[in-house]
Amino acid sequence: ADAAAAACAPVPATVPPVSWAGGRSRAQRLALSRHARRLAFTLEPVARALGCTPLICAISEASCALLLPDAFQCVRAWHRDNLSVSAQAIAEAQAQLGAALAARLPAGAFTVAARAKSRASVFDKAVLRGKAVGDLLAARIVIDDAQDCAAVGTIVALLWGEEVHRRKDYVAHPKANGYQSLHMTVRLPCGRPLEVQIRTRSMHAAAERGSACWTAYKAGGVRRAGAGSGSWARALEGVRCLQAQQPERLRETLARALGASASAGPATA
Image (tube, rainbow, N blue to C red; front, top):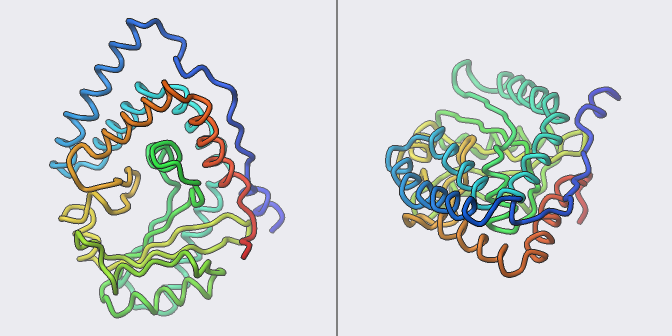
């Protein structure tokens, strides 16, 4: 038990002083900026239309790395350090979820997948939206019947302590674009939060390939701030302008967003 707790102990985030110019000449920065804008404004919408998650994730990472190289380096280092101590926690959480559900649901009536959020997802939340990255670990449970979503949520809550104030029931109250899923956050024994999503197979298909897919949470992808074409690219461009005008403010935002997650411990009221 001690070894398991040590394996997923929080890693302090360090946001080193950075040169937001990226150490490149002006001509190099202009060329990279043009290339990144082409990726963000032209290819990203095409990847969205195709519904190709790996491609959209690759384009997102490339755009972020080119336009905001130092911020992306900070996120990449933070993600690497936290991921290295989270692998065991992810595996154990998936195994425990699977065992708990198998004891109560018929064989083949559910699937469980657990993972760490991608660098692009962390960058999107910490840098583009300036929000604390409170849950690096995530799990998704896909079931057959919508009426079982609440019951499965109860199973998860009994397995670990739920942070009830963070629950979002998009099954009972779908988003405007039709997205449906029960979102809840639990606290693992090691102190790390785990975001759990519960949805049916039809809800999952709509989120991944249907009308809800580009504003919904995506496995390994980026959560969009809006459904309109180019909205994510405009957010990226806005942060790039902030970098040029108020670099200290951007550094402070990044430090707050990553620091909040790194010190994750028992939830407080």
